[in-house]
View 1: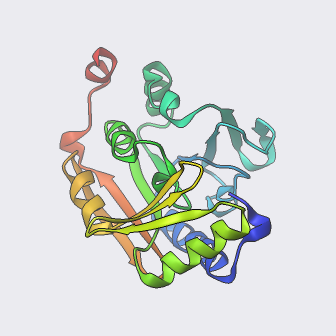
View 2: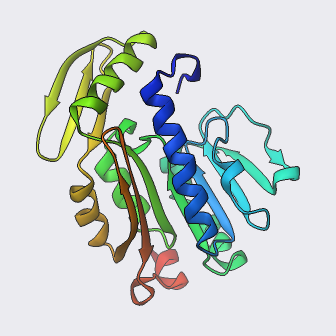
Length: 223
């Protein structure tokens, strides 16, 4: 993420993202917010004062302890974090299951093997929220402009019914997913779509895990 090169459309994404999570976190009772790929902990400011915050990033720019904000940051690669069964179980025990995991600012679309990563996240006992670039022409143009400013050369734009993928000269691939496709995939893991907001630039999805499908602690540890 390169904030110095945010265009008007990318700033619109961030403004909409903050507004969506601000409303969401005031209509729910989450005790812990986990932001994966937190970078500069941009969403810590939208949580309730009485809830905690945990940022996960491979190279965070914030201090590890954010005592004034009831927060902490873990320096960890995202896939490795979700493999730490004991930590996940301790989080669920401490917060009595009232935990929301957020994949912000199209984080899923910039992951290596994003569907495999999503499958791992969906096996966690947390509720889930995602911020995504739209697959519209407007959003694609905004992504291309942003990457150009960042010095990332895009050599091809691949459009399918499921996603729009930018293929870059350095081998990096960035995707914007059809929200309906993601909703079907995530729902198959025992989630239901609780809230959504769609625009020509960005989409936001909030899923709640069905209580009957929540994994027992023993079962998760055994896996």
